[in-house]
Image (cartoon, rainbow, N blue to C red; front, side, top):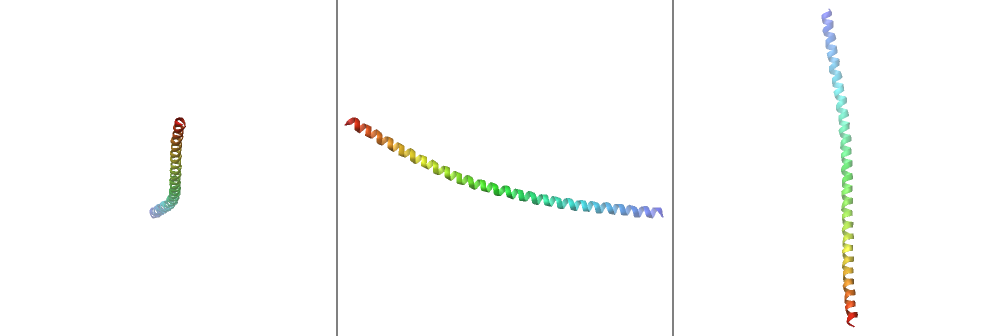
Length: 95
């Protein structure tokens, strides 16, 4: 009688262990799934932020290009004005 009781008790303990391992595994898998979803969301957020930064960089590059072009035009105008002043000085000296 004790032997069959021990066997039944052993089966019950093994069954409880299997069930507890299954439940623990299920909880762990669900927690990991939420972690993966959270990580994916964070990666998407970072990606959109980087895209915004890249778009801003392109806009800044365009603005810098425009400013550079404006300075080039100003330099060209200054050179032209300087050559005009030099020519005027030569004319004044010759007169």
